[in-house]
Image (tube, rainbow, N blue to C red; front, side):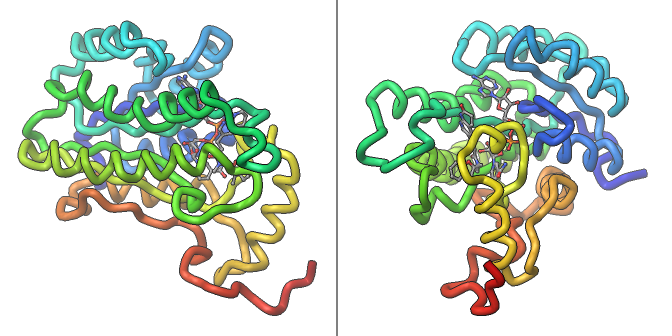
Length: 264
Ligand code: NAD
Ligand code: 0WE
């Protein structure tokens, strides 16, 4: 009997075994949750079906969050076998690659700004609306993934930082909206982790080394560690927590000067 047993949780954002969503799914499965999954496009379908199997699930649905139709179909299909839903894990983001490289003011476009905000922030409230009836009055919770670039500037994160700032405000406004019907809304701000989304980023390896050296724990965090915190936030152990951003970053955000013992 795990602390998530009896909980039915929908996980969006599995793309590979390295995905933060995969770390979350593995931890939630271990702690007894029943899981369902979505995939962004046909290219990812078979892979996500295979991963889902490994976590004891045959519930796998398409959902590109830029499509209102796919979002509404997702919850009507899910509702056929799960009349109640206890959690939604939103583990996705996107900005055009060419806007995540270079001087922010130089590289940002209207189109890229809108796309980044649509996929990375608006989608959270869109999913909450569509899933609202299934989640009502059962102490369910929504969880999203953010990054410190929401609050502080750093090289190249650029328009994603603005989208994460919007996402974090979304968490607070949604917590206020959905609190009266018992639904909690939280975020995890994770330290940098090598995933597919990180693979395309110039100098990501260098950032990982710098980050580890400047972090109180002197290392980067893992998707397992994010998974454990996510499991807690979506469980009844966190029944008093909503509107919160929980840092799983080895303490990086709490320091002002990092470490002076930088071997770089
Ligand atoms: P990932 O590449 O494994 O996952 C990103 C996911 O976003 C993929 O599954 C992709 O299919 C999905 N996605 C993109 N556009 C979509 C759309 N239109 N519709 C549906 N899905 C879409 O990378 P990840 O690092 O695991 O990212 C997951 C989340 O974690 C993101 O919100 C990211 O910002 C956040 N995050 C990542 C890090 C890091 O360093 N990797 C740190 C903090 C927060
Ligand atoms: O949120 C993220 C990455 C999100 C992301 C990644 C990509 C790469 C591929 C969003 N959109 C895209 N679009 C693509 O085409 N992180 C927290 C990881 C990350 O990304 C960075 C970072 C860190 C940390 C980009 C620049 C600087 C730092």
